[in-house]
Length: 338
Image (tube, rainbow, N blue to C red; front, side, top):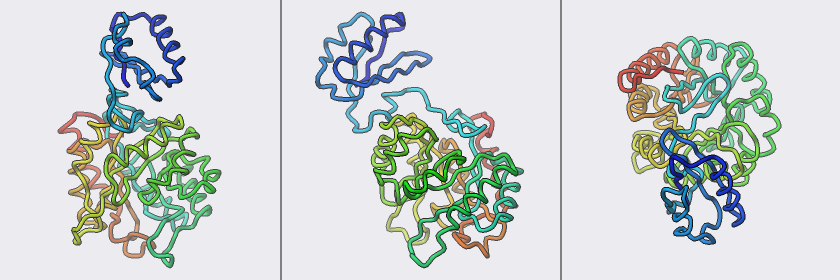
C-alpha cells in the first residue's frame, strides 16, 4: 500500500501518522520527492482500513500495489535510486562505464586492462575471481588469489571494483570489494540474496538466463527486504530459440524495468551475444534505450583469454566504443559520463 501525503502536512503530523501505522505491525518507508511525500507500507496491509487512512487530514490518496514486489516498485518509491560505488554513482542520470576481463588470470593482466579501461573513461573495474561455468572442466577462476590481484589493480588505478560472489562462504573475502555481483545462475539463490540484504555493500543483480522481469524484481526484493536498498539491476541477455547468438539481449527490458522500478539498470552486451563484433552496436542501443550504465568485457589478448575470449573487446576497440556511447548519451540525454 502507498499513502500519498498532502503538500502542507507538517513533519510532526507525519511522525504521529507513522507511529500509528506501526501499531498494525507495518514497516513504513518514507520517500520525500520533489512533488510528493510518499509512505510505502510493507506487511499485512489488510489489517488497516484504506478508507480510514484516506479520510485523514494529511492524506491526499491511498493506493494498493498489486505487484508482488513492493520495495523495488516505482509506485512505492517514485524517485530514482542512486547507488554510490566508491567515487562513482549509478542511476543519477549519467552513464556509468564498467569494464574489465571476464576472468582474472595474472596480476599483470588485470592491472594492464585496468589502466587501459580507466584511460578510456571507465570508472568501475570488473573482473572474475570465482567463475561459474557450464562445464566442470572449464577454467573456474583463481578464487581468493584472483581476488587479491583484483584488489592490487584497484590500489594501482583507484578504480572501484565489482566481482561475482558465488556462495556465502566467500563473503568474508569481499570486505574490500566495492560492488558485489550476483550472477545470472544465482539470481534465485534466495539464501544468498537474503544474506546480501543484511550486509551494507551495494549489489549488482544479473537477470537469470530464462527469467522474467518480474522474477528479476522479486529477487531484488529479497535483497531489499533485508534492509539493503542499494541494488543495481543488470540485463545480460536471456535464452531464446535463436541460435546465432549466445543469448538474446532484451533491449525492451531497459525502459520496462525503469518504468516498473526505481532501481538503476545497467546492460551487459558482452554476455548477451558472446560475439565481440556485436558488442559495439548493442552497447549503443542500450544507451539509447536509457541504460544507466554498461558492463563490457575487455581483455588485452582475447585470443588467449582463459574465459570468454570471443566476446571480449581489446582495449583499443573498447576506447572507440566508449567514445561512441558517450556521444549517444550526450546527444540524447545531455548528461555527463561517470
